[in-house]
Image 1 (cartoon, rainbow, N blue to C red):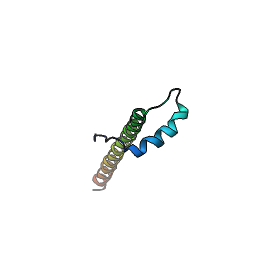
Image 2 (tube, one colour):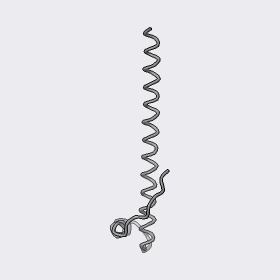
Image 3 (cartoon, rainbow, N blue to C red):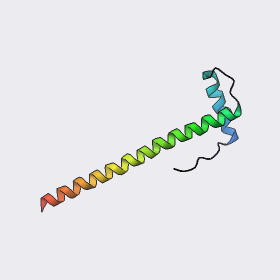
Length: 73
């Protein structure tokens, strides 16, 4: 999996603005960085799963097509 880069500082403020009302403690800039890193990681995993599913679907489609072709001859 690719290494995640640090989020730009201009993204930390909006993240804190969004998440602060949902937290029982005062969030700091480092919390904002961690939140953004966790979100990137989460969506990276989802993308990885989607790629794996697409690859499997292509492989299954190829197997079905090959099986159908061999039955036609």
